[in-house]
Amino acid sequence: MLPQVLPLAAFAATVSAHGLITTPTPRGPGDASVAACGQSVVDNIKNDKTSHVEGLPELAAADPDYHAEQCNVWLCKGLQYADNEANVQQYTAGQSVPIEVQLTIPHVGSANVSIVDTKTDTIIGTPLLSWPSGYADEREFYAHTTPANQTKFNVTIPEDIGSQCSEAGACVIQWWWYGTGAKQTYESCVDFTVA
Ligand SMILES: *[C@@H]1O[C@H](CO)[C@@H](O)[C@H](O)[C@H]1NC(C)=O
Ligand SMILES: *[C@@H]1O[C@H](CO)[C@@H](O)[C@H](O)[C@H]1NC(C)=O
Ligand SMILES: *[C@@H]1O[C@H](CO)[C@@H](O)[C@H](O)[C@H]1NC(C)=O
Ligand SMILES: [Cu+2]
Image (cartoon, rainbow, N blue to C red):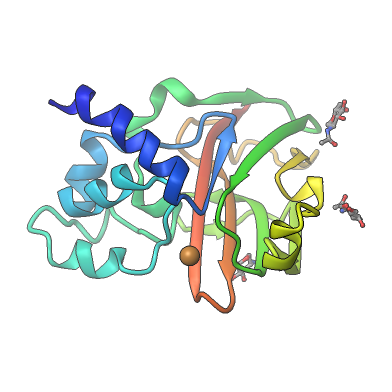
């Protein structure tokens, strides 16, 4: 049943979407995410991969499959590494990594792109890129003048990253956007290792 539902869900996402990393392949849902966060969180994400985090904590808490020690919806929307072993990028320290983001509904606010330690949900070093304000501005969006570098940019893997991200699953590149007026948070993650 699921394969027949997926194309429809993908189509719906292009209509109602807010934002998501499109390149490299971002973390997506699967059985491990269901086991950690529950079916209702995963159904919400499958229905619109680009939607906001707000609402997911309540969905998770009400689900009998929710395991608080495994599911943190404020990190990659709770999506689990175990479902994404086929999507791990291999980088080197100092490498410039091209990233593309799809923005389809704007909500002006702040954003950043960071390397996050998944065990502690903390940013390693400082954000690789940061927009303190003015990200996804409605006026620019509808005038088709959104700066290109909000959706297509390079990040540089820090030279001093060391061995913190040598193991797959230990680190993600997380794109995080908060629409101030909408009070909505969007997260999308890329799994990677640095040899
Ligand atoms: C990254 O962006 C989010 C959303 O705007 C913000 O809450 C967070 O404080 C930022 N983190 C850093 C380290 O700038
Ligand atoms: C993004 O592009 C704008 C111009 O559209 C420029 O002012 C800004 O400095 C650029 N930011 C980065 C991080 O390259
Ligand atoms: C990213 O870096 C590559 C290689 O340095 C460069 O060709 C490309 O123009 C950059 N992309 C953006 C969006 O700045
Ligand atoms: Cu919205």
